[in-house]
Image 1 (tube, rainbow, N blue to C red):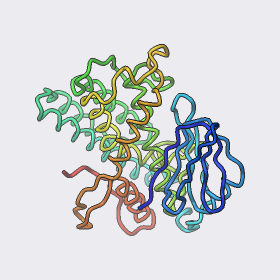
Image 2 (image 1 turned 90 degrees about the vertical axis):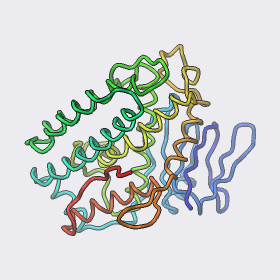
Image 3 (image 1 turned 45 degrees about the vertical axis):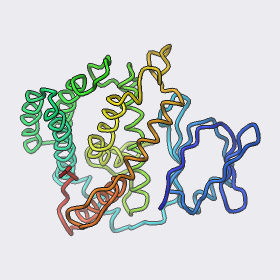
Length: 330
């Protein structure tokens, strides 16, 4: 089974014979088993040479880079080997025709909002008194189908998320200062947690898209832009409630992450290394968790669900089967 490698220490990442070797300033080193590596996450101050990048590229290993504060800054995306000109043409055509683009974008929001609703229902059944929130989101979801363009659809999505985030203080058992989502920069520990976990989901989507023939820069809900893989943003919308939000609730409600895991002097703007390590351990566990897939009839991991979503989108683009976003069924 392929693994993600998370490297926190400073040092140099180089090719050494048939491995990638991370050498710390004190001379200690760690060899990465490249034949078992899905992707590499760099959190420390790491120097790389072209030999290391060439080797990672040859083995199709993406490298995701995070800055000093733990925020995602970019990826080394190896040269694509799974390419399909026909699929690329279809991907672009579905973007350029408004009705086709809107149809896919609506499927993303339909699934994402459904999964949000499942999270709220889960906690409502555990005496959180979220009935009003459920009804409000149900009403807002009625606006998805009637949205006439992407801007209106994004407005519906924004309203659903606003209502959703407003109930988080009822879900989270710790006393937290969280009223609304603030991104740049996050203004409290919950917003910092959301930013960090969402960036992990984004990079996981990128790693899974990479092994398919989809082009990650052509998207439908988010506008394709320069210097970003916007299709990852689209697909991650569906999986944030299942993987990211549930992980955050669990970490906070079990007191695995507290204010002590953040730098207080920076207004909880960034996580300490200890906090990041705890989150990554739990994140990896979540991604490896399996469920019995009701159509495939076998166990699949949460990570594999993301890849299946890519394949479903490919089938839609190629005219084989209409796309429906993943919805939690258990």
